Length: 476
Image (cartoon, rainbow, N blue to C red):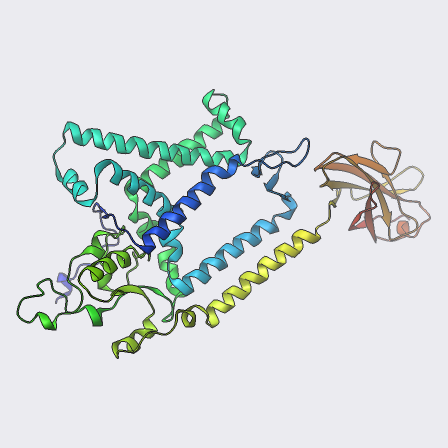
């Protein structure tokens, strides 16, 4: 073929409508269960109450942006403890690597939000318009009053789901019952309405129209997953050595040479991605395993062994071609790569739990004022100024005493207080300006820098915390 006849492959293909057929089976039931659980968690969690005491929010899960706090049942994360969130994100990434290396794109097939909401939208579509054949017929039919009515009904239900999805999201950022009333009385902040509209629009388009296009063209994971998988990864595949040559006419001459596949296309008709798993591994396959349910149902009806399409590993293919059974599933799941991911995942999780239990109930951070670095008073005293942020994580106000240690010549004075103590309100932080001073004849006054330590003591129970800092200044 000449170079003039060669055309570059298309990087994007226009979407062709896909009408997945209803199927029943173990994997379909598993997907239903995961859908119910995940959607239930997403929609209902903001409404769960959790008593934290007076003056604190009673929403179990709340991202309090105004108060700069994240509440998760009995756990409270402060802004300076963002490493907990970072740790959870690392665990999520390692978990994704672990499941992908063991079971392929199992996340995409069962728990990805795009998959879950697309499944929900397809369920509504099937309920309104009927199963695959009826939907195909309706799609190809000319516009009529019935077709318009069915479409409007379907789109209305999609829209309600999309609005509920966007609404549930904003409930995580403020008190859900209060915001619910404000939304319907038009008293909510414009940002709440804007967020709901944007999320509802994306849910409506992605779940109702884009569907598999999001997985193929927008999501980067199909292109990353290859680095996480190897020949021992269990993924959905077709046993071509058993199914080929395929054929429908079982009673015709030469039918005894046909494989188990009767070319019924049941696996294609149920696939939400519109692919044929018999063509081999494909980037578009999300390993939802609905094709396994469809094929097993057909194999049972024609009296053939189940498993023509199944979760399988490429490393077992030579064994099965020779008539030997595949290795046990545990040999594929528990191997060096997956154990390494499991170990890293567990280490991060244990570290977060330990950090959660050993963190103190009081805390402080010190910020020296650098403009000016120090001030020389009229009597020759050197004064440094510091902003000390005190954090009280208790449910009631506590008196905190601030002292300095590290040099016998340094002493501290609190702005606005004649005492060494200051009261910090319950479950909040307070910025206190502190002056640290040294007499003119002291050792620090004749040194450029002197290291010392701020100590904060909870006068209610004696709990202490500290932070190191530096005293600057020198006299002639």
